Length: 90
Image (cartoon, rainbow, N blue to C red; front, side, top):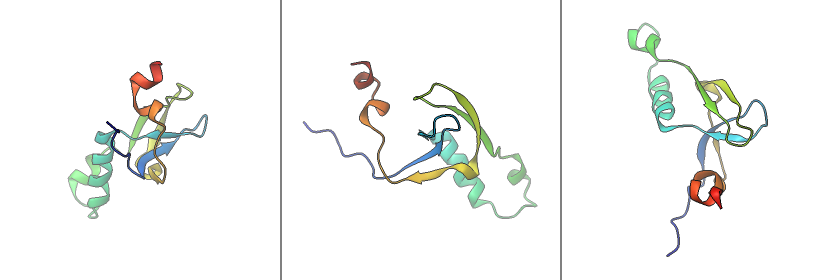
């Protein structure tokens, strides 16, 4: 049976070291939506949302700190080997 089609876009940041896209975890995407939804800078919750996060690039295996402002939509899917650990092991 054919695998379901992957989405045409994914949320990612650009690796500071090798320049390849790094998929942003769901928890960070949720924080990004909360951050964008809060417009009142006087709200206490607004000040408590972390605007930075760290992720490790699977291509170069280096980790770096990124800002929520650096998250972008990539118009192409990740290769199946990057998202499927079984395929990467082959």
